[in-house]
Image (cartoon, rainbow, N blue to C red; front, side):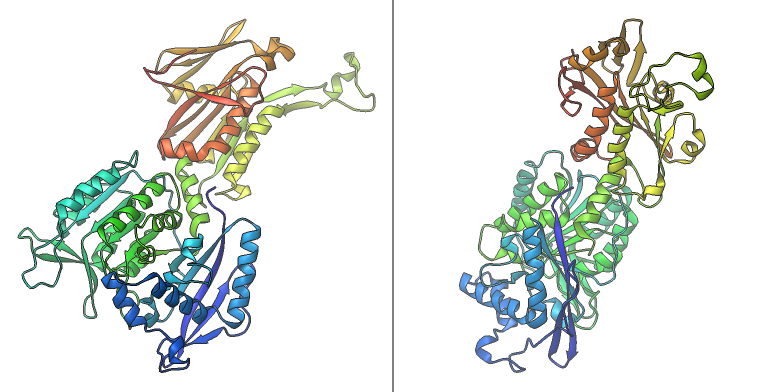
Length: 588
Protein backbone atom coordinates (compact mmCIF):
# COMPACT_ATOMS: atom_id res chain seq x y z
CA UNK A 1 0.00 0.00 0.00
CA UNK A 2 2.04 2.96 -1.26
CA UNK A 3 5.51 3.84 0.00
CA UNK A 4 6.87 2.58 3.29
CA UNK A 5 7.74 5.38 5.72
CA UNK A 6 9.80 5.63 8.91
CA UNK A 7 8.39 8.60 10.84
CA UNK A 8 10.12 10.78 13.40
CA UNK A 9 8.43 13.68 15.19
CA UNK A 10 10.80 16.59 15.73
CA UNK A 11 9.59 19.32 18.10
CA UNK A 12 10.97 22.87 18.23
CA UNK A 13 10.14 24.81 21.41
CA UNK A 14 11.16 28.02 23.16
CA UNK A 15 13.16 27.76 26.41
CA UNK A 16 14.05 31.41 26.98
CA UNK A 17 14.53 34.76 25.30
CA UNK A 18 16.09 33.99 21.93
CA UNK A 19 16.79 30.39 22.95
CA UNK A 20 15.11 27.26 21.58
CA UNK A 21 15.28 23.52 21.92
CA UNK A 22 14.93 20.65 19.44
CA UNK A 23 14.03 17.11 20.43
CA UNK A 24 12.91 13.93 18.67
CA UNK A 25 9.77 13.17 20.66
CA UNK A 26 8.64 10.09 18.74
CA UNK A 27 10.16 7.54 16.39
CA UNK A 28 10.04 3.76 15.98
CA UNK A 29 13.38 3.79 17.84
CA UNK A 30 12.07 5.94 20.70
CA UNK A 31 12.77 9.53 21.70
CA UNK A 32 16.17 11.21 21.71
CA UNK A 33 17.98 11.12 25.03
CA UNK A 34 18.16 14.01 27.47
CA UNK A 35 16.34 17.29 27.19
CA UNK A 36 17.31 17.87 23.56
CA UNK A 37 19.56 20.27 21.67
CA UNK A 38 19.57 23.98 22.55
CA UNK A 39 20.09 26.59 19.83
CA UNK A 40 19.67 30.26 18.94
CA UNK A 41 18.53 31.88 15.70
CA UNK A 42 19.80 35.37 16.52
CA UNK A 43 23.53 35.59 15.82
CA UNK A 44 23.93 37.94 18.80
CA UNK A 45 22.87 35.08 21.07
CA UNK A 46 25.20 32.14 21.49
CA UNK A 47 27.10 30.93 18.42
CA UNK A 48 29.88 32.84 16.58
CA UNK A 49 28.75 35.19 13.83
CA UNK A 50 30.58 33.45 11.00
CA UNK A 51 28.56 30.30 11.71
CA UNK A 52 25.27 32.12 12.06
CA UNK A 53 23.68 33.25 8.75
CA UNK A 54 20.82 35.73 8.91
CA UNK A 55 17.42 34.11 8.52
CA UNK A 56 15.90 37.42 7.43
CA UNK A 57 18.57 37.96 4.77
CA UNK A 58 18.04 34.46 3.40
CA UNK A 59 14.26 34.90 3.31
CA UNK A 60 14.71 38.18 1.42
CA UNK A 61 16.99 36.52 -1.15
CA UNK A 62 14.52 33.67 -1.49
CA UNK A 63 11.62 36.09 -2.05
CA UNK A 64 13.55 37.92 -4.76
CA UNK A 65 14.54 34.66 -6.46
CA UNK A 66 18.27 35.35 -6.12
CA UNK A 67 19.76 32.77 -3.71
CA UNK A 68 22.74 30.96 -5.19
CA UNK A 69 23.20 27.23 -4.79
CA UNK A 70 26.14 28.02 -2.53
CA UNK A 71 23.92 30.22 -0.33
CA UNK A 72 21.25 27.51 -0.20
CA UNK A 73 23.77 24.85 0.76
CA UNK A 74 25.36 27.01 3.44
CA UNK A 75 22.04 28.05 4.95
CA UNK A 76 20.56 24.56 4.81
CA UNK A 77 23.66 23.06 6.41
CA UNK A 78 23.50 25.61 9.22
CA UNK A 79 19.84 24.86 9.85
CA UNK A 80 20.58 21.13 9.99
CA UNK A 81 23.50 21.50 12.42
CA UNK A 82 21.43 23.91 14.50
CA UNK A 83 18.61 21.42 15.10
CA UNK A 84 20.25 17.99 14.80
CA UNK A 85 22.83 18.19 17.53
CA UNK A 86 23.97 16.09 20.48
CA UNK A 87 21.44 13.37 21.40
CA UNK A 88 19.08 14.56 18.65
CA UNK A 89 21.78 13.92 16.04
CA UNK A 90 22.50 10.48 17.47
CA UNK A 91 18.83 9.44 17.37
CA UNK A 92 18.40 10.87 13.87
CA UNK A 93 21.34 8.86 12.53
CA UNK A 94 20.01 5.72 14.21
CA UNK A 95 16.58 6.23 12.61
CA UNK A 96 18.15 6.97 9.23
CA UNK A 97 20.18 3.76 9.32
CA UNK A 98 17.13 1.66 10.18
CA UNK A 99 15.00 3.37 7.51
CA UNK A 100 17.65 2.72 4.86
CA UNK A 101 17.99 -0.91 5.98
CA UNK A 102 14.21 -1.38 5.67
CA UNK A 103 14.11 0.44 2.31
CA UNK A 104 11.74 2.99 3.84
CA UNK A 105 11.59 6.74 3.34
CA UNK A 106 12.58 8.75 6.40
CA UNK A 107 9.73 11.12 7.24
CA UNK A 108 10.45 14.16 9.41
CA UNK A 109 7.33 15.64 11.00
CA UNK A 110 8.12 19.12 12.28
CA UNK A 111 6.01 20.18 15.22
CA UNK A 112 6.93 23.84 15.62
CA UNK A 113 5.53 24.94 18.98
CA UNK A 114 7.12 28.40 18.94
CA UNK A 115 5.43 30.86 16.53
CA UNK A 116 8.72 32.72 15.90
CA UNK A 117 10.13 29.56 14.33
CA UNK A 118 7.23 28.84 11.97
CA UNK A 119 8.41 31.23 9.25
CA UNK A 120 11.91 29.70 9.14
CA UNK A 121 12.33 27.69 5.88
CA UNK A 122 13.24 24.37 7.50
CA UNK A 123 12.54 22.68 4.16
CA UNK A 124 16.13 23.52 3.16
CA UNK A 125 17.74 21.13 5.67
CA UNK A 126 21.10 20.00 4.21
CA UNK A 127 23.00 17.22 6.00
CA UNK A 128 26.37 17.92 4.38
CA UNK A 129 25.86 15.53 1.51
CA UNK A 130 22.66 16.96 0.09
CA UNK A 131 19.30 18.58 0.76
CA UNK A 132 17.08 16.13 2.64
CA UNK A 133 14.13 16.75 0.33
CA UNK A 134 16.20 16.03 -2.76
CA UNK A 135 17.40 12.80 -1.15
CA UNK A 136 13.78 11.62 -0.87
CA UNK A 137 13.42 12.37 2.84
CA UNK A 138 9.99 13.84 3.43
CA UNK A 139 9.74 17.02 5.52
CA UNK A 140 6.20 17.91 6.59
CA UNK A 141 4.73 20.20 9.18
CA UNK A 142 2.24 18.93 11.74
CA UNK A 143 0.08 20.65 14.31
CA UNK A 144 0.57 18.98 17.65
CA UNK A 145 -2.25 16.66 18.73
CA UNK A 146 -4.25 17.27 15.54
CA UNK A 147 -5.51 13.82 14.47
CA UNK A 148 -6.71 13.12 10.95
CA UNK A 149 -10.30 12.03 10.72
CA UNK A 150 -11.14 8.67 9.21
CA UNK A 151 -12.56 9.87 5.91
CA UNK A 152 -12.67 7.59 2.87
CA UNK A 153 -11.01 9.18 -0.12
CA UNK A 154 -10.60 7.99 -3.71
CA UNK A 155 -8.07 9.39 -6.20
CA UNK A 156 -9.05 12.99 -6.92
CA UNK A 157 -11.29 13.76 -9.86
CA UNK A 158 -13.22 16.96 -9.07
CA UNK A 159 -10.89 19.93 -8.58
CA UNK A 160 -12.04 23.48 -7.87
CA UNK A 161 -9.60 26.00 -9.36
CA UNK A 162 -9.92 29.65 -8.34
CA UNK A 163 -7.82 32.35 -10.05
CA UNK A 164 -7.95 35.93 -8.79
CA UNK A 165 -6.01 38.90 -10.15
CA UNK A 166 -7.67 42.09 -8.94
CA UNK A 167 -6.62 45.54 -10.10
CA UNK A 168 -4.84 47.44 -7.37
CA UNK A 169 -4.35 51.18 -7.86
CA UNK A 170 -2.47 51.38 -4.58
CA UNK A 171 0.19 49.01 -5.89
CA UNK A 172 -0.10 46.67 -2.92
CA UNK A 173 -0.39 43.57 -5.13
CA UNK A 174 1.65 42.81 -8.20
CA UNK A 175 -0.67 42.10 -11.12
CA UNK A 176 0.06 39.11 -13.32
CA UNK A 177 -1.21 37.76 -16.62
CA UNK A 178 -4.12 35.67 -15.34
CA UNK A 179 -5.16 34.46 -18.79
CA UNK A 180 -1.66 33.21 -19.53
CA UNK A 181 -1.66 31.40 -16.20
CA UNK A 182 -5.04 29.87 -16.99
CA UNK A 183 -3.94 28.73 -20.46
CA UNK A 184 -0.82 27.14 -19.04
CA UNK A 185 -2.74 25.58 -16.17
CA UNK A 186 -5.34 24.03 -18.48
CA UNK A 187 -2.64 22.69 -20.76
CA UNK A 188 -0.81 21.13 -17.82
CA UNK A 189 -3.91 19.66 -16.20
CA UNK A 190 -5.01 18.23 -19.54
CA UNK A 191 -2.03 15.87 -19.17
CA UNK A 192 -3.61 14.38 -16.04
CA UNK A 193 -6.13 11.79 -17.16
CA UNK A 194 -9.40 11.69 -15.23
CA UNK A 195 -8.97 15.08 -13.57
CA UNK A 196 -11.96 17.39 -14.06
CA UNK A 197 -11.14 20.97 -13.00
CA UNK A 198 -13.88 23.56 -12.54
CA UNK A 199 -12.37 26.99 -13.24
CA UNK A 200 -13.43 30.19 -11.47
CA UNK A 201 -11.80 33.25 -13.09
CA UNK A 202 -12.08 35.92 -11.96
CA UNK A 203 -12.68 34.27 -8.60
CA UNK A 204 -14.75 36.24 -6.16
CA UNK A 205 -15.10 35.40 -2.51
CA UNK A 206 -18.78 34.55 -2.87
CA UNK A 207 -18.06 32.47 -6.00
CA UNK A 208 -15.67 30.23 -4.09
CA UNK A 209 -17.93 29.86 -1.07
CA UNK A 210 -20.98 29.11 -3.25
CA UNK A 211 -19.15 26.44 -5.27
CA UNK A 212 -17.92 24.72 -2.12
CA UNK A 213 -21.42 24.79 -0.65
CA UNK A 214 -23.35 23.66 -3.73
CA UNK A 215 -21.04 21.10 -5.36
CA UNK A 216 -18.75 18.28 -4.33
CA UNK A 217 -15.02 18.72 -4.87
CA UNK A 218 -12.07 16.57 -3.86
CA UNK A 219 -9.48 19.36 -3.77
CA UNK A 220 -9.15 23.15 -3.90
CA UNK A 221 -6.47 25.04 -5.84
CA UNK A 222 -6.03 28.80 -5.49
CA UNK A 223 -3.84 30.90 -7.78
CA UNK A 224 -3.43 34.52 -6.79
CA UNK A 225 -2.20 36.66 -3.96
CA UNK A 226 -2.16 35.87 -0.30
CA UNK A 227 -1.57 38.23 2.55
CA UNK A 228 -0.94 38.13 6.23
CA UNK A 229 -1.53 40.91 8.75
CA UNK A 230 -1.29 40.85 12.52
CA UNK A 231 -4.72 42.44 12.79
CA UNK A 232 -6.75 40.08 10.60
CA UNK A 233 -4.50 37.04 10.14
CA UNK A 234 -4.03 35.27 6.83
CA UNK A 235 -6.35 35.64 3.87
CA UNK A 236 -6.57 35.08 0.13
CA UNK A 237 -7.04 38.07 -2.13
CA UNK A 238 -10.09 37.38 -4.25
CA UNK A 239 -11.66 39.60 -6.88
CA UNK A 240 -14.80 41.67 -6.38
CA UNK A 241 -17.32 42.28 -9.24
CA UNK A 242 -15.54 45.62 -9.73
CA UNK A 243 -12.20 43.74 -9.97
CA UNK A 244 -11.01 45.18 -6.69
CA UNK A 245 -9.29 43.19 -3.93
CA UNK A 246 -11.80 41.19 -1.90
CA UNK A 247 -10.21 39.32 1.03
CA UNK A 248 -11.35 35.78 1.87
CA UNK A 249 -10.25 35.23 5.44
CA UNK A 250 -8.73 31.90 6.42
CA UNK A 251 -11.33 31.34 9.13
CA UNK A 252 -14.21 31.64 6.63
CA UNK A 253 -12.52 29.44 4.04
CA UNK A 254 -11.78 26.81 6.70
CA UNK A 255 -15.46 26.79 7.66
CA UNK A 256 -16.51 26.32 4.03
CA UNK A 257 -14.05 23.47 3.49
CA UNK A 258 -15.20 21.73 6.65
CA UNK A 259 -18.86 22.08 5.73
CA UNK A 260 -18.22 20.68 2.24
CA UNK A 261 -17.36 17.27 3.81
CA UNK A 262 -15.57 16.24 0.59
CA UNK A 263 -12.56 18.52 0.04
CA UNK A 264 -9.49 16.72 1.36
CA UNK A 265 -6.66 18.93 0.02
CA UNK A 266 -5.97 22.62 -0.46
CA UNK A 267 -3.13 23.84 -2.67
CA UNK A 268 -2.44 27.56 -2.30
CA UNK A 269 -0.25 28.89 -5.10
CA UNK A 270 0.14 32.27 -3.51
CA UNK A 271 2.79 33.90 -1.37
CA UNK A 272 2.45 34.48 2.38
CA UNK A 273 -0.03 31.63 2.82
CA UNK A 274 2.48 29.73 4.97
CA UNK A 275 3.15 32.71 7.26
CA UNK A 276 1.47 33.21 10.61
CA UNK A 277 1.45 35.37 13.73
CA UNK A 278 4.28 35.34 16.24
CA UNK A 279 1.66 35.47 18.98
CA UNK A 280 -0.97 33.08 17.56
CA UNK A 281 0.25 30.25 15.29
CA UNK A 282 -3.25 29.53 13.97
CA UNK A 283 -3.84 32.90 12.31
CA UNK A 284 -2.04 31.92 9.09
CA UNK A 285 -3.98 30.54 6.12
CA UNK A 286 -2.35 27.09 6.04
CA UNK A 287 -2.48 26.64 9.79
CA UNK A 288 -6.13 27.71 10.06
CA UNK A 289 -7.21 25.44 7.20
CA UNK A 290 -5.47 22.48 8.84
CA UNK A 291 -6.94 23.13 12.26
CA UNK A 292 -10.50 24.02 11.24
CA UNK A 293 -10.90 22.99 7.60
CA UNK A 294 -11.16 19.24 8.20
CA UNK A 295 -8.68 18.53 5.39
CA UNK A 296 -5.94 15.93 5.06
CA UNK A 297 -3.23 18.31 3.86
CA UNK A 298 -2.56 21.93 2.90
CA UNK A 299 0.22 23.07 0.58
CA UNK A 300 1.15 26.74 0.96
CA UNK A 301 3.99 28.97 -0.20
CA UNK A 302 6.56 30.73 1.94
CA UNK A 303 7.38 33.24 -0.81
CA UNK A 304 6.33 33.85 -4.42
CA UNK A 305 7.27 31.08 -6.84
CA UNK A 306 8.17 31.63 -10.50
CA UNK A 307 5.41 30.71 -12.97
CA UNK A 308 7.20 27.78 -14.65
CA UNK A 309 8.42 26.25 -11.39
CA UNK A 310 4.98 26.71 -9.80
CA UNK A 311 3.19 25.05 -12.70
CA UNK A 312 5.69 22.20 -12.86
CA UNK A 313 5.22 21.42 -9.17
CA UNK A 314 1.42 21.77 -9.27
CA UNK A 315 1.09 19.51 -12.34
CA UNK A 316 3.25 16.84 -10.74
CA UNK A 317 1.47 17.15 -7.39
CA UNK A 318 -2.05 16.75 -8.78
CA UNK A 319 -0.93 14.09 -11.24
CA UNK A 320 0.43 12.01 -8.37
CA UNK A 321 -2.74 12.57 -6.32
CA UNK A 322 -4.77 11.41 -9.30
CA UNK A 323 -2.74 8.19 -9.28
CA UNK A 324 -3.71 7.62 -5.66
CA UNK A 325 -0.50 8.78 -3.97
CA UNK A 326 -0.70 10.43 -0.55
CA UNK A 327 -0.40 14.26 -0.50
CA UNK A 328 3.12 14.21 0.94
CA UNK A 329 4.24 11.55 -1.54
CA UNK A 330 2.77 13.78 -4.26
CA UNK A 331 4.49 16.87 -2.87
CA UNK A 332 7.84 15.11 -2.66
CA UNK A 333 7.51 14.24 -6.34
CA UNK A 334 6.28 17.74 -7.13
CA UNK A 335 9.30 19.40 -5.55
CA UNK A 336 11.55 17.51 -7.93
CA UNK A 337 9.74 19.02 -10.91
CA UNK A 338 10.83 22.63 -10.19
CA UNK A 339 12.87 24.07 -13.06
CA UNK A 340 15.38 25.92 -10.88
CA UNK A 341 17.69 25.15 -7.96
CA UNK A 342 15.73 26.74 -5.12
CA UNK A 343 11.93 26.54 -5.62
CA UNK A 344 11.76 22.94 -4.35
CA UNK A 345 11.92 24.24 -0.76
CA UNK A 346 9.38 27.06 -1.08
CA UNK A 347 6.20 24.98 -0.62
CA UNK A 348 5.27 24.00 2.91
CA UNK A 349 3.00 21.01 3.39
CA UNK A 350 0.93 20.65 6.52
CA UNK A 351 -0.44 17.20 7.17
CA UNK A 352 -0.94 14.73 10.04
CA UNK A 353 1.44 12.66 12.09
CA UNK A 354 -0.36 9.49 10.94
CA UNK A 355 0.50 10.45 7.40
CA UNK A 356 0.67 8.03 4.48
CA UNK A 357 -0.40 4.98 6.48
CA UNK A 358 -3.69 6.57 7.55
CA UNK A 359 -4.15 7.96 4.05
CA UNK A 360 -3.92 4.45 2.57
CA UNK A 361 -6.51 3.24 5.07
CA UNK A 362 -8.85 6.00 3.98
CA UNK A 363 -8.32 5.10 0.33
CA UNK A 364 -9.16 1.44 0.94
CA UNK A 365 -12.22 2.50 2.91
CA UNK A 366 -13.33 4.51 -0.13
CA UNK A 367 -13.23 1.47 -2.41
CA UNK A 368 -15.17 -0.59 0.11
CA UNK A 369 -17.59 2.25 0.96
CA UNK A 370 -16.70 1.57 4.58
CA UNK A 371 -16.47 3.64 7.75
CA UNK A 372 -13.29 2.91 9.66
CA UNK A 373 -14.10 1.77 13.18
CA UNK A 374 -17.84 1.46 12.45
CA UNK A 375 -18.46 -1.00 9.60
CA UNK A 376 -19.06 -4.70 10.27
CA UNK A 377 -18.21 -7.42 7.77
CA UNK A 378 -19.84 -10.81 7.14
CA UNK A 379 -18.06 -13.26 4.84
CA UNK A 380 -20.66 -15.78 3.71
CA UNK A 381 -19.51 -19.17 2.44
CA UNK A 382 -21.44 -22.22 1.22
CA UNK A 383 -21.15 -25.45 3.22
CA UNK A 384 -20.72 -29.00 1.95
CA UNK A 385 -21.31 -32.39 3.54
CA UNK A 386 -18.02 -34.14 4.04
CA UNK A 387 -17.44 -37.63 5.35
CA UNK A 388 -19.88 -39.92 7.15
CA UNK A 389 -21.94 -39.03 10.19
CA UNK A 390 -21.08 -41.17 13.21
CA UNK A 391 -24.59 -42.65 13.46
CA UNK A 392 -24.39 -43.79 9.81
CA UNK A 393 -20.90 -45.26 10.00
CA UNK A 394 -21.99 -48.89 10.62
CA UNK A 395 -24.39 -48.78 7.66
CA UNK A 396 -21.96 -47.44 5.08
CA UNK A 397 -18.89 -49.10 3.66
CA UNK A 398 -16.08 -46.57 3.88
CA UNK A 399 -12.43 -46.93 2.97
CA UNK A 400 -10.33 -44.69 5.20
CA UNK A 401 -6.71 -43.96 4.25
CA UNK A 402 -4.68 -43.99 6.34
CA UNK A 403 -6.68 -46.33 8.51
CA UNK A 404 -6.29 -44.42 11.77
CA UNK A 405 -7.87 -41.23 10.41
CA UNK A 406 -11.54 -40.38 10.58
CA UNK A 407 -13.59 -38.50 8.01
CA UNK A 408 -15.10 -35.13 8.99
CA UNK A 409 -18.60 -35.87 10.34
CA UNK A 410 -20.68 -33.02 8.97
CA UNK A 411 -20.82 -29.81 6.92
CA UNK A 412 -17.66 -27.81 6.21
CA UNK A 413 -16.34 -25.10 3.91
CA UNK A 414 -14.54 -25.83 0.66
CA UNK A 415 -10.80 -25.13 0.81
CA UNK A 416 -10.86 -22.79 -2.18
CA UNK A 417 -13.69 -20.71 -0.67
CA UNK A 418 -11.73 -20.46 2.56
CA UNK A 419 -8.69 -19.26 0.62
CA UNK A 420 -10.76 -16.63 -1.21
CA UNK A 421 -12.23 -15.44 2.09
CA UNK A 422 -8.72 -15.39 3.57
CA UNK A 423 -7.54 -12.94 0.92
CA UNK A 424 -10.51 -10.68 1.56
CA UNK A 425 -9.95 -10.94 5.33
CA UNK A 426 -6.34 -9.85 4.87
CA UNK A 427 -7.60 -6.79 3.02
CA UNK A 428 -10.26 -5.96 5.61
CA UNK A 429 -7.87 -6.19 8.57
CA UNK A 430 -6.07 -3.14 7.18
CA UNK A 431 -9.04 -0.98 8.15
CA UNK A 432 -11.02 -3.09 10.67
CA UNK A 433 -10.53 -4.99 13.91
CA UNK A 434 -10.54 -8.76 13.61
CA UNK A 435 -13.62 -8.90 15.86
CA UNK A 436 -15.61 -6.96 13.26
CA UNK A 437 -14.97 -9.58 10.57
CA UNK A 438 -16.96 -12.84 10.71
CA UNK A 439 -16.58 -15.95 8.56
CA UNK A 440 -20.04 -17.54 8.37
CA UNK A 441 -22.00 -20.25 6.58
CA UNK A 442 -24.72 -18.82 4.37
CA UNK A 443 -27.28 -20.40 6.70
CA UNK A 444 -26.21 -18.11 9.56
CA UNK A 445 -28.16 -14.98 8.71
CA UNK A 446 -28.25 -13.40 12.17
CA UNK A 447 -24.87 -11.67 12.12
CA UNK A 448 -25.13 -11.09 8.38
CA UNK A 449 -28.31 -9.09 8.97
CA UNK A 450 -26.41 -6.82 11.35
CA UNK A 451 -23.36 -6.40 9.12
CA UNK A 452 -22.97 -3.32 6.92
CA UNK A 453 -20.85 -5.27 4.41
CA UNK A 454 -21.59 -8.76 3.11
CA UNK A 455 -19.19 -10.75 0.95
CA UNK A 456 -20.65 -13.80 -0.81
CA UNK A 457 -18.26 -16.44 -2.21
CA UNK A 458 -19.07 -19.02 -4.87
CA UNK A 459 -21.83 -19.31 -7.43
CA UNK A 460 -24.02 -22.41 -7.73
CA UNK A 461 -23.17 -23.56 -4.20
CA UNK A 462 -23.97 -20.18 -2.64
CA UNK A 463 -27.65 -19.37 -2.83
CA UNK A 464 -27.02 -16.05 -1.05
CA UNK A 465 -24.82 -14.81 -3.91
CA UNK A 466 -27.46 -15.89 -6.41
CA UNK A 467 -30.26 -14.18 -4.51
CA UNK A 468 -28.32 -10.91 -4.23
CA UNK A 469 -27.61 -10.92 -7.96
CA UNK A 470 -31.23 -11.69 -8.78
CA UNK A 471 -32.58 -9.02 -6.44
CA UNK A 472 -30.18 -6.11 -6.93
CA UNK A 473 -28.01 -6.60 -9.98
CA UNK A 474 -28.92 -6.09 -13.63
CA UNK A 475 -25.32 -6.88 -14.57
CA UNK A 476 -24.65 -10.61 -14.17
CA UNK A 477 -26.47 -13.91 -13.94
CA UNK A 478 -25.29 -17.48 -13.42
CA UNK A 479 -27.27 -20.26 -15.08
CA UNK A 480 -26.61 -23.99 -14.79
CA UNK A 481 -27.40 -26.60 -17.41
CA UNK A 482 -26.85 -30.38 -17.18
CA UNK A 483 -23.59 -30.20 -19.14
CA UNK A 484 -22.46 -26.59 -18.82
CA UNK A 485 -22.44 -23.62 -16.49
CA UNK A 486 -22.87 -20.12 -17.90
CA UNK A 487 -21.97 -16.60 -16.76
CA UNK A 488 -24.09 -13.99 -18.52
CA UNK A 489 -23.13 -10.34 -18.84
CA UNK A 490 -26.64 -8.94 -19.00
CA UNK A 491 -25.59 -5.36 -19.61
CA UNK A 492 -23.74 -6.16 -22.81
CA UNK A 493 -25.41 -9.37 -23.95
CA UNK A 494 -22.40 -11.67 -23.75
CA UNK A 495 -22.00 -15.13 -22.25
CA UNK A 496 -19.06 -17.10 -20.91
CA UNK A 497 -19.38 -20.81 -20.22
CA UNK A 498 -17.49 -23.87 -19.05
CA UNK A 499 -18.33 -27.56 -18.82
CA UNK A 500 -19.81 -28.62 -15.51
CA UNK A 501 -16.65 -28.59 -13.33
CA UNK A 502 -18.10 -31.19 -10.93
CA UNK A 503 -17.91 -33.74 -13.76
CA UNK A 504 -14.45 -32.85 -15.07
CA UNK A 505 -12.27 -34.08 -12.22
CA UNK A 506 -8.59 -33.21 -12.77
CA UNK A 507 -9.42 -32.07 -16.29
CA UNK A 508 -11.03 -28.94 -14.78
CA UNK A 509 -7.63 -27.43 -14.00
CA UNK A 510 -6.64 -27.68 -17.67
CA UNK A 511 -9.76 -25.77 -18.77
CA UNK A 512 -10.34 -22.02 -18.67
CA UNK A 513 -12.71 -20.60 -16.08
CA UNK A 514 -14.50 -17.29 -15.49
CA UNK A 515 -15.28 -15.28 -12.40
CA UNK A 516 -17.02 -12.09 -11.28
CA UNK A 517 -16.21 -9.41 -8.73
CA UNK A 518 -19.15 -7.11 -8.23
CA UNK A 519 -19.81 -4.36 -5.72
CA UNK A 520 -23.46 -3.51 -5.11
CA UNK A 521 -24.61 -0.65 -2.88
CA UNK A 522 -28.19 -0.58 -1.61
CA UNK A 523 -28.88 2.26 0.81
CA UNK A 524 -26.80 1.43 3.90
CA UNK A 525 -25.85 -2.08 2.72
CA UNK A 526 -22.80 -2.99 0.64
CA UNK A 527 -22.58 -6.36 -1.08
CA UNK A 528 -19.53 -7.91 -2.72
CA UNK A 529 -20.00 -10.93 -4.95
CA UNK A 530 -16.80 -12.99 -5.28
CA UNK A 531 -17.96 -15.77 -7.59
CA UNK A 532 -16.39 -18.10 -10.11
CA UNK A 533 -18.11 -20.63 -12.30
CA UNK A 534 -15.60 -23.07 -10.82
CA UNK A 535 -13.84 -22.88 -7.47
CA UNK A 536 -10.44 -21.95 -8.97
CA UNK A 537 -12.04 -18.77 -10.32
CA UNK A 538 -13.65 -17.99 -6.94
CA UNK A 539 -10.26 -18.23 -5.25
CA UNK A 540 -8.69 -16.12 -7.99
CA UNK A 541 -11.32 -13.40 -7.62
CA UNK A 542 -10.56 -13.12 -3.90
CA UNK A 543 -6.83 -12.88 -4.66
CA UNK A 544 -7.49 -10.25 -7.34
CA UNK A 545 -9.42 -8.00 -4.95
CA UNK A 546 -6.60 -8.17 -2.39
CA UNK A 547 -3.81 -7.45 -4.84
CA UNK A 548 -5.50 -5.12 -7.35
CA UNK A 549 -7.62 -2.94 -5.08
CA UNK A 550 -5.59 0.19 -5.83
CA UNK A 551 -6.17 -0.08 -9.58
CA UNK A 552 -9.87 -0.73 -8.92
CA UNK A 553 -9.98 2.38 -6.72
CA UNK A 554 -8.34 4.43 -9.46
CA UNK A 555 -10.96 3.30 -11.99
CA UNK A 556 -14.12 3.17 -9.91
CA UNK A 557 -13.46 5.29 -6.81
CA UNK A 558 -16.15 4.67 -4.21
CA UNK A 559 -18.81 3.76 -6.81
CA UNK A 560 -20.35 0.33 -7.48
CA UNK A 561 -18.63 -1.73 -10.17
CA UNK A 562 -18.56 -5.14 -11.82
CA UNK A 563 -15.81 -6.95 -13.71
CA UNK A 564 -15.23 -10.34 -15.30
CA UNK A 565 -11.97 -12.29 -15.02
CA UNK A 566 -10.78 -15.08 -17.30
CA UNK A 567 -8.58 -17.78 -15.77
CA UNK A 568 -6.61 -19.60 -18.43
CA UNK A 569 -6.47 -23.38 -18.51
CA UNK A 570 -3.41 -24.93 -16.92
CA UNK A 571 -2.57 -21.70 -15.07
CA UNK A 572 -2.68 -20.91 -11.36
CA UNK A 573 -5.64 -19.09 -9.84
CA UNK A 574 -3.71 -15.81 -9.64
CA UNK A 575 -3.03 -15.82 -13.39
CA UNK A 576 -6.11 -14.02 -14.60
CA UNK A 577 -7.04 -11.55 -17.30
CA UNK A 578 -9.80 -9.00 -17.05
CA UNK A 579 -12.29 -9.21 -19.89
CA UNK A 580 -13.20 -5.89 -21.45
CA UNK A 581 -16.86 -5.01 -21.14
CA UNK A 582 -18.83 -2.62 -23.27
CA UNK A 583 -19.97 -2.30 -26.88
CA UNK A 584 -16.40 -2.08 -28.23
CA UNK A 585 -14.99 -4.94 -26.16
CA UNK A 586 -14.37 -8.32 -27.73
CA UNK A 587 -16.24 -11.26 -26.21
CA UNK A 588 -15.24 -14.87 -26.01
